Amino acid sequence: MSSDIQLLKSHQLTVTPQRLEIVHLLSSHGHLDIDTLYALLQEKFPSLSLATVYKNINLMLEKNFMSEVPLENRKNVYELIKEVHSHVVCRECNTIVDIFLDTKALFEEATNISHFQLETSNIVFNGICEKCKIA
Image (cartoon, rainbow, N blue to C red; front, side, top):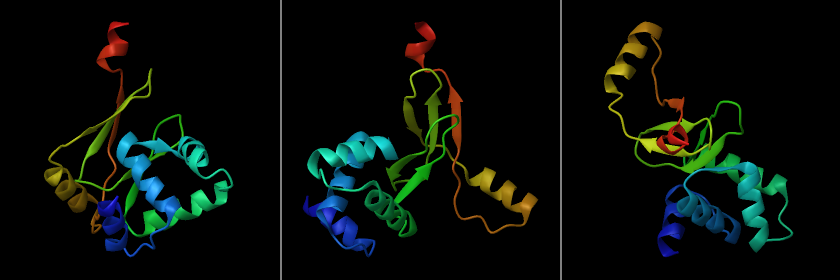
């Protein structure tokens, strides 16, 4: 818990019981959509409103504490910021797996083509996981 407090403080976020629980839930589950996160938070904080959850999520996104992963044909999910990585998503069971790719060459090519100063990327590959492929 102490490391979660330090993590929040290092991103200039006020430590609240709700934010600590968000960190705990994302640490233990990895990727959660807003509805699932809200339902899990309500177990511990029954009077917590959805608006408060959105407010906290938006602030945590602004402070680069967490990131939003856009998914095809379903609600986006949130995760704590960690090493630069991409995602693989199963279209059958919705399993999300983090994968670590060397995107340096891709960033350079995208920069050369667009002439943008790129800061982040969000690469999501969609397919069928091994379990669903066999089933």
